[in-house]
Length: 388
Ligand code: AOS
Ligand code: ZN
Ligand code: ZN
Image (cartoon, rainbow, N blue to C red):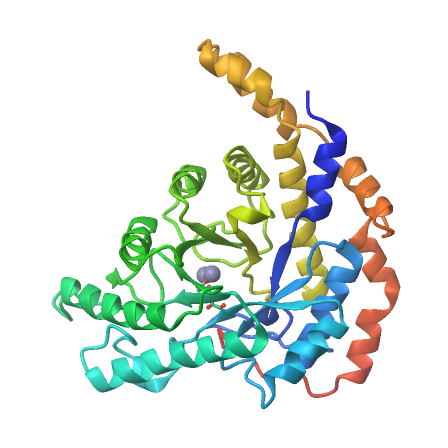
Protein backbone atom coordinates (compact mmCIF):
# COMPACT_ATOMS: atom_id res chain seq x y z
CA UNK A 1 0.00 0.00 0.00
CA UNK A 2 1.41 3.48 -0.82
CA UNK A 3 2.53 5.81 1.96
CA UNK A 4 0.19 8.80 1.48
CA UNK A 5 2.57 11.20 3.22
CA UNK A 6 5.36 10.18 0.83
CA UNK A 7 2.98 10.58 -2.12
CA UNK A 8 2.03 14.04 -0.93
CA UNK A 9 5.67 15.00 -0.46
CA UNK A 10 6.47 13.89 -4.00
CA UNK A 11 3.54 15.87 -5.39
CA UNK A 12 4.60 18.98 -3.46
CA UNK A 13 8.14 18.77 -4.81
CA UNK A 14 7.15 18.12 -8.41
CA UNK A 15 8.28 20.82 -10.86
CA UNK A 16 6.53 21.35 -14.19
CA UNK A 17 8.07 23.83 -16.63
CA UNK A 18 5.69 25.93 -18.70
CA UNK A 19 6.47 27.32 -22.17
CA UNK A 20 6.64 31.08 -22.75
CA UNK A 21 5.07 30.50 -26.17
CA UNK A 22 2.08 28.84 -24.55
CA UNK A 23 0.89 32.25 -23.34
CA UNK A 24 1.15 34.11 -26.62
CA UNK A 25 -0.91 34.08 -29.78
CA UNK A 26 -0.25 30.88 -31.66
CA UNK A 27 -2.14 28.61 -33.97
CA UNK A 28 -1.70 26.45 -37.03
CA UNK A 29 -0.53 27.13 -40.56
CA UNK A 30 -4.17 27.76 -41.39
CA UNK A 31 -4.97 30.47 -38.88
CA UNK A 32 -3.82 32.14 -35.70
CA UNK A 33 -6.84 33.20 -33.64
CA UNK A 34 -5.53 36.20 -31.72
CA UNK A 35 -6.84 36.50 -28.19
CA UNK A 36 -7.31 39.57 -25.97
CA UNK A 37 -4.82 40.12 -23.20
CA UNK A 38 -1.99 38.01 -24.57
CA UNK A 39 1.52 39.09 -23.60
CA UNK A 40 3.22 41.76 -25.70
CA UNK A 41 6.74 40.85 -24.62
CA UNK A 42 8.67 38.22 -22.66
CA UNK A 43 8.17 40.08 -19.37
CA UNK A 44 4.40 39.77 -19.70
CA UNK A 45 4.80 36.08 -20.62
CA UNK A 46 6.60 35.63 -17.32
CA UNK A 47 3.77 37.46 -15.54
CA UNK A 48 1.30 34.97 -17.02
CA UNK A 49 3.50 32.02 -16.09
CA UNK A 50 3.58 33.42 -12.56
CA UNK A 51 -0.21 33.13 -12.48
CA UNK A 52 0.06 29.42 -13.23
CA UNK A 53 2.66 28.92 -10.54
CA UNK A 54 0.74 31.03 -8.01
CA UNK A 55 -2.35 28.84 -8.40
CA UNK A 56 -0.72 25.43 -8.86
CA UNK A 57 2.42 25.76 -6.74
CA UNK A 58 4.41 23.42 -9.03
CA UNK A 59 5.27 25.57 -12.06
CA UNK A 60 8.20 27.79 -11.06
CA UNK A 61 10.18 27.34 -14.31
CA UNK A 62 9.51 28.92 -17.70
CA UNK A 63 11.05 27.80 -21.00
CA UNK A 64 12.17 30.61 -23.28
CA UNK A 65 12.30 30.51 -27.05
CA UNK A 66 14.91 32.49 -28.97
CA UNK A 67 14.37 34.77 -30.90
CA UNK A 68 10.75 35.04 -29.78
CA UNK A 69 11.94 35.92 -26.25
CA UNK A 70 15.04 37.86 -27.21
CA UNK A 71 15.57 40.92 -24.96
CA UNK A 72 18.27 43.54 -24.59
CA UNK A 73 19.01 42.60 -20.99
CA UNK A 74 18.74 38.95 -19.94
CA UNK A 75 19.91 39.82 -16.43
CA UNK A 76 16.87 42.08 -16.06
CA UNK A 77 14.59 39.38 -17.45
CA UNK A 78 16.07 36.80 -15.08
CA UNK A 79 15.74 39.16 -12.12
CA UNK A 80 12.10 39.88 -13.04
CA UNK A 81 11.44 36.14 -13.15
CA UNK A 82 12.92 35.80 -9.68
CA UNK A 83 10.78 38.67 -8.40
CA UNK A 84 7.76 36.70 -9.62
CA UNK A 85 8.97 33.57 -7.83
CA UNK A 86 10.03 31.99 -11.12
CA UNK A 87 13.28 30.95 -12.76
CA UNK A 88 14.28 30.61 -16.39
CA UNK A 89 14.04 27.05 -17.65
CA UNK A 90 15.19 25.63 -20.93
CA UNK A 91 16.39 27.90 -23.71
CA UNK A 92 14.75 26.75 -26.95
CA UNK A 93 16.69 27.41 -30.12
CA UNK A 94 14.79 28.23 -33.29
CA UNK A 95 16.33 27.16 -36.56
CA UNK A 96 13.01 26.58 -38.27
CA UNK A 97 11.81 30.06 -39.25
CA UNK A 98 14.79 31.74 -40.92
CA UNK A 99 14.50 32.12 -44.71
CA UNK A 100 17.99 30.65 -45.13
CA UNK A 101 16.95 27.38 -43.49
CA UNK A 102 14.55 26.22 -46.20
CA UNK A 103 16.71 23.19 -47.04
CA UNK A 104 17.85 22.65 -43.48
CA UNK A 105 19.79 24.46 -40.79
CA UNK A 106 22.73 22.53 -39.33
CA UNK A 107 22.22 19.87 -42.02
CA UNK A 108 21.99 22.30 -44.96
CA UNK A 109 24.19 21.46 -47.97
CA UNK A 110 25.72 24.96 -47.87
CA UNK A 111 28.38 25.33 -45.15
CA UNK A 112 27.63 29.05 -44.82
CA UNK A 113 24.04 28.26 -43.83
CA UNK A 114 25.24 25.58 -41.43
CA UNK A 115 27.55 28.14 -39.84
CA UNK A 116 24.66 30.57 -39.38
CA UNK A 117 22.55 27.89 -37.74
CA UNK A 118 25.33 26.71 -35.45
CA UNK A 119 26.06 30.30 -34.44
CA UNK A 120 22.43 30.63 -33.38
CA UNK A 121 22.78 27.57 -31.16
CA UNK A 122 25.93 29.08 -29.65
CA UNK A 123 24.03 32.34 -29.03
CA UNK A 124 21.48 30.29 -27.09
CA UNK A 125 24.26 28.95 -24.87
CA UNK A 126 25.40 32.54 -24.26
CA UNK A 127 21.84 33.28 -23.13
CA UNK A 128 21.95 30.25 -20.83
CA UNK A 129 25.05 31.76 -19.25
CA UNK A 130 23.15 35.04 -18.74
CA UNK A 131 19.96 33.48 -17.35
CA UNK A 132 21.45 30.58 -15.42
CA UNK A 133 19.43 28.15 -17.51
CA UNK A 134 20.79 24.62 -17.35
CA UNK A 135 19.12 23.31 -20.50
CA UNK A 136 19.54 24.01 -24.21
CA UNK A 137 16.62 22.49 -26.03
CA UNK A 138 17.29 21.59 -29.65
CA UNK A 139 14.53 20.72 -32.08
CA UNK A 140 15.51 20.57 -35.75
CA UNK A 141 12.79 20.84 -38.37
CA UNK A 142 15.54 19.77 -40.77
CA UNK A 143 14.61 17.13 -43.32
CA UNK A 144 13.76 16.57 -46.95
CA UNK A 145 10.52 16.31 -48.94
CA UNK A 146 11.56 14.13 -51.82
CA UNK A 147 13.68 11.04 -52.44
CA UNK A 148 17.04 12.11 -53.85
CA UNK A 149 16.78 15.66 -52.52
CA UNK A 150 19.83 15.28 -50.31
CA UNK A 151 22.25 12.75 -48.86
CA UNK A 152 20.54 11.12 -45.86
CA UNK A 153 23.76 9.91 -44.20
CA UNK A 154 25.61 13.08 -45.19
CA UNK A 155 23.04 15.12 -43.29
CA UNK A 156 23.73 13.02 -40.21
CA UNK A 157 27.43 13.89 -40.52
CA UNK A 158 26.57 17.60 -40.72
CA UNK A 159 24.24 17.30 -37.72
CA UNK A 160 26.87 15.47 -35.67
CA UNK A 161 29.46 18.14 -36.49
CA UNK A 162 27.22 20.97 -35.32
CA UNK A 163 26.12 19.13 -32.18
CA UNK A 164 29.72 18.37 -31.26
CA UNK A 165 30.70 22.04 -31.58
CA UNK A 166 27.83 23.18 -29.40
CA UNK A 167 28.44 20.37 -26.91
CA UNK A 168 32.02 21.58 -26.44
CA UNK A 169 30.68 25.08 -25.68
CA UNK A 170 28.44 23.88 -22.83
CA UNK A 171 29.47 24.69 -19.28
CA UNK A 172 29.85 22.04 -16.59
CA UNK A 173 26.32 22.67 -15.30
CA UNK A 174 24.68 22.88 -18.70
CA UNK A 175 23.34 20.20 -21.02
CA UNK A 176 21.78 19.89 -24.42
CA UNK A 177 18.40 18.22 -24.86
CA UNK A 178 17.90 16.81 -28.34
CA UNK A 179 14.26 16.50 -29.35
CA UNK A 180 13.06 14.13 -32.07
CA UNK A 181 9.92 14.32 -34.22
CA UNK A 182 8.63 11.77 -36.74
CA UNK A 183 7.69 14.32 -39.45
CA UNK A 184 6.62 17.92 -40.07
CA UNK A 185 7.52 20.31 -41.55
CA UNK A 186 9.57 17.84 -43.62
CA UNK A 187 7.58 15.01 -45.14
CA UNK A 188 10.05 12.48 -46.60
CA UNK A 189 12.92 12.42 -44.10
CA UNK A 190 13.39 14.25 -40.82
CA UNK A 191 16.98 14.40 -39.65
CA UNK A 192 16.10 13.64 -36.01
CA UNK A 193 12.92 11.58 -36.53
CA UNK A 194 12.85 9.18 -33.61
CA UNK A 195 14.20 8.39 -30.18
CA UNK A 196 16.88 6.10 -31.60
CA UNK A 197 18.45 8.85 -33.69
CA UNK A 198 18.47 11.28 -30.81
CA UNK A 199 19.78 8.62 -28.44
CA UNK A 200 22.60 7.62 -30.81
CA UNK A 201 23.78 11.21 -31.23
CA UNK A 202 23.52 11.87 -27.48
CA UNK A 203 25.46 8.70 -26.71
CA UNK A 204 28.31 9.82 -28.99
CA UNK A 205 28.30 13.37 -27.59
CA UNK A 206 28.56 12.46 -23.90
CA UNK A 207 26.78 12.76 -20.54
CA UNK A 208 25.64 16.35 -21.08
CA UNK A 209 23.51 15.34 -24.06
CA UNK A 210 20.12 13.80 -23.43
CA UNK A 211 16.88 13.05 -25.23
CA UNK A 212 13.63 15.05 -25.20
CA UNK A 213 10.45 12.99 -25.50
CA UNK A 214 7.69 15.14 -26.94
CA UNK A 215 4.53 13.12 -26.47
CA UNK A 216 3.12 14.36 -29.79
CA UNK A 217 6.10 13.31 -31.89
CA UNK A 218 5.52 9.61 -32.53
CA UNK A 219 3.72 7.46 -35.07
CA UNK A 220 0.18 6.60 -33.94
CA UNK A 221 0.20 3.66 -31.55
CA UNK A 222 3.83 4.06 -30.48
CA UNK A 223 4.43 2.73 -26.99
CA UNK A 224 5.93 5.90 -25.49
CA UNK A 225 6.24 4.46 -22.01
CA UNK A 226 8.63 1.82 -23.40
CA UNK A 227 10.86 4.60 -24.75
CA UNK A 228 10.68 6.38 -21.38
CA UNK A 229 11.65 3.24 -19.43
CA UNK A 230 14.54 2.49 -21.82
CA UNK A 231 15.95 6.03 -21.77
CA UNK A 232 15.65 6.31 -17.99
CA UNK A 233 17.50 3.00 -17.60
CA UNK A 234 20.26 4.40 -19.88
CA UNK A 235 20.37 7.75 -18.04
CA UNK A 236 19.47 9.51 -21.29
CA UNK A 237 15.97 10.87 -20.60
CA UNK A 238 16.57 14.61 -20.33
CA UNK A 239 13.09 16.02 -20.61
CA UNK A 240 9.52 15.71 -21.73
CA UNK A 241 7.60 18.09 -23.94
CA UNK A 242 4.14 17.16 -22.69
CA UNK A 243 1.12 17.79 -24.90
CA UNK A 244 -1.75 15.84 -26.38
CA UNK A 245 -2.38 14.53 -29.87
CA UNK A 246 -5.24 12.78 -31.63
CA UNK A 247 -3.61 12.57 -35.07
CA UNK A 248 -0.18 14.23 -35.29
CA UNK A 249 1.77 16.86 -33.40
CA UNK A 250 -1.49 18.53 -32.45
CA UNK A 251 0.00 20.28 -29.41
CA UNK A 252 -3.22 20.15 -27.40
CA UNK A 253 -3.38 20.35 -23.61
CA UNK A 254 -1.32 17.62 -21.91
CA UNK A 255 -3.46 14.71 -20.77
CA UNK A 256 -6.51 15.93 -22.62
CA UNK A 257 -6.51 13.28 -25.35
CA UNK A 258 -5.25 10.19 -23.54
CA UNK A 259 -4.95 10.44 -19.75
CA UNK A 260 -4.31 6.68 -19.57
CA UNK A 261 -1.21 7.04 -21.74
CA UNK A 262 0.03 9.93 -19.57
CA UNK A 263 -0.51 7.74 -16.50
CA UNK A 264 1.44 4.86 -18.08
CA UNK A 265 4.26 7.24 -18.90
CA UNK A 266 4.32 8.60 -15.34
CA UNK A 267 4.28 5.04 -13.99
CA UNK A 268 7.55 4.36 -15.81
CA UNK A 269 8.92 7.70 -14.58
CA UNK A 270 8.07 6.88 -10.96
CA UNK A 271 9.14 3.23 -11.25
CA UNK A 272 12.54 4.14 -12.74
CA UNK A 273 13.46 7.02 -10.46
CA UNK A 274 12.54 9.76 -12.91
CA UNK A 275 10.79 11.88 -10.29
CA UNK A 276 13.94 12.23 -8.20
CA UNK A 277 15.47 15.65 -8.78
CA UNK A 278 18.93 14.10 -9.05
CA UNK A 279 17.79 12.15 -12.12
CA UNK A 280 17.41 15.52 -13.80
CA UNK A 281 14.32 14.87 -15.89
CA UNK A 282 12.75 18.18 -16.91
CA UNK A 283 8.96 17.93 -17.09
CA UNK A 284 8.16 20.60 -19.67
CA UNK A 285 4.94 21.45 -21.45
CA UNK A 286 5.03 22.26 -25.15
CA UNK A 287 1.61 23.30 -26.38
CA UNK A 288 -0.08 25.58 -28.85
CA UNK A 289 -3.27 26.88 -27.32
CA UNK A 290 -5.07 27.74 -30.49
CA UNK A 291 -8.72 28.20 -29.51
CA UNK A 292 -8.73 27.95 -25.72
CA UNK A 293 -7.77 30.71 -23.26
CA UNK A 294 -4.03 30.58 -22.67
CA UNK A 295 -3.43 30.71 -18.89
CA UNK A 296 -6.32 28.43 -17.90
CA UNK A 297 -5.21 25.91 -20.55
CA UNK A 298 -1.72 25.79 -19.08
CA UNK A 299 -3.21 25.34 -15.61
CA UNK A 300 -5.32 22.46 -16.97
CA UNK A 301 -2.22 20.83 -18.45
CA UNK A 302 -0.32 21.20 -15.20
CA UNK A 303 -3.12 19.64 -13.17
CA UNK A 304 -3.47 16.83 -15.72
CA UNK A 305 0.23 16.01 -15.31
CA UNK A 306 -0.19 16.20 -11.53
CA UNK A 307 -3.14 13.80 -11.60
CA UNK A 308 -1.25 11.28 -13.75
CA UNK A 309 1.70 11.55 -11.37
CA UNK A 310 -0.48 11.10 -8.29
CA UNK A 311 -2.09 7.98 -9.75
CA UNK A 312 1.33 6.56 -10.65
CA UNK A 313 2.55 7.23 -7.11
CA UNK A 314 -0.45 5.35 -5.70
CA UNK A 315 0.45 2.12 -7.51
CA UNK A 316 1.04 -0.63 -4.94
CA UNK A 317 4.60 -1.38 -6.04
CA UNK A 318 4.98 -4.44 -3.80
CA UNK A 319 1.76 -6.05 -4.96
CA UNK A 320 2.65 -5.26 -8.56
CA UNK A 321 6.11 -6.78 -8.29
CA UNK A 322 4.75 -9.89 -6.57
CA UNK A 323 2.10 -10.38 -9.24
CA UNK A 324 4.63 -9.83 -12.04
CA UNK A 325 7.15 -12.27 -10.55
CA UNK A 326 4.50 -14.91 -10.07
CA UNK A 327 3.27 -14.40 -13.62
CA UNK A 328 -0.18 -13.44 -12.44
CA UNK A 329 -1.15 -11.33 -15.45
CA UNK A 330 -4.59 -10.30 -14.31
CA UNK A 331 -3.45 -9.42 -10.79
CA UNK A 332 -0.59 -7.30 -12.12
CA UNK A 333 -2.82 -5.50 -14.57
CA UNK A 334 -5.38 -5.07 -11.82
CA UNK A 335 -2.88 -3.34 -9.54
CA UNK A 336 -2.11 -0.79 -12.24
CA UNK A 337 -5.77 -0.27 -13.14
CA UNK A 338 -6.73 0.19 -9.47
CA UNK A 339 -4.35 3.15 -9.30
CA UNK A 340 -5.46 4.58 -12.64
CA UNK A 341 -9.11 4.37 -11.61
CA UNK A 342 -8.50 6.23 -8.35
CA UNK A 343 -9.95 9.74 -8.22
CA UNK A 344 -6.90 11.67 -7.02
CA UNK A 345 -8.52 15.09 -7.10
CA UNK A 346 -9.29 15.06 -3.33
CA UNK A 347 -5.66 14.08 -2.64
CA UNK A 348 -4.35 16.91 -4.81
CA UNK A 349 -6.83 19.36 -3.27
CA UNK A 350 -5.40 18.45 0.11
CA UNK A 351 -1.83 18.90 -1.13
CA UNK A 352 -2.70 22.35 -2.42
CA UNK A 353 -4.37 23.37 0.82
CA UNK A 354 -1.28 22.20 2.72
CA UNK A 355 0.71 24.48 0.39
CA UNK A 356 -1.62 27.33 1.28
CA UNK A 357 -3.30 27.29 -2.12
CA UNK A 358 -6.90 26.99 -3.27
CA UNK A 359 -7.86 23.33 -3.77
CA UNK A 360 -8.95 23.94 -7.39
CA UNK A 361 -6.38 26.11 -9.23
CA UNK A 362 -8.44 26.31 -12.40
CA UNK A 363 -11.49 27.71 -10.58
CA UNK A 364 -9.29 29.94 -8.44
CA UNK A 365 -7.70 31.47 -11.53
CA UNK A 366 -11.04 32.09 -13.23
CA UNK A 367 -12.29 33.81 -10.07
CA UNK A 368 -9.11 35.90 -9.72
CA UNK A 369 -10.11 38.50 -12.31
CA UNK A 370 -6.66 38.31 -13.89
CA UNK A 371 -8.01 37.35 -17.29
CA UNK A 372 -10.24 40.45 -17.35
CA UNK A 373 -7.37 42.64 -16.14
CA UNK A 374 -4.92 41.60 -18.82
CA UNK A 375 -7.58 41.84 -21.53
CA UNK A 376 -8.23 45.43 -20.46
CA UNK A 377 -4.59 46.41 -19.89
CA UNK A 378 -2.81 44.74 -22.77
CA UNK A 379 -4.00 46.42 -25.89
CA UNK A 380 -2.13 45.33 -29.02
CA UNK A 381 -1.14 41.79 -28.11
CA UNK A 382 2.00 40.04 -29.20
CA UNK A 383 2.26 39.11 -32.83
CA UNK A 384 1.85 35.43 -33.52
CA UNK A 385 4.88 33.58 -32.25
CA UNK A 386 4.75 30.60 -34.53
CA UNK A 387 2.39 28.49 -36.55
CA UNK A 388 1.19 31.61 -38.31
C1 AOS B 1 8.08 21.23 -32.63
O1 AOS B 1 7.14 20.54 -33.06
C2 AOS B 1 8.67 20.87 -31.32
O2 AOS B 1 7.72 20.27 -30.48
C3 AOS B 1 9.36 21.98 -30.53
O3 AOS B 1 9.72 21.51 -29.26
C4 AOS B 1 8.46 23.09 -30.24
O4 AOS B 1 7.15 22.85 -30.52
C5 AOS B 1 8.85 24.36 -30.96
O5 AOS B 1 10.24 24.52 -30.92
C6 AOS B 1 8.26 25.50 -30.17
O6 AOS B 1 8.88 25.38 -28.91
ZN1 ZN C 1 8.36 19.84 -28.50
ZN1 ZN D 1 6.06 19.46 -31.48
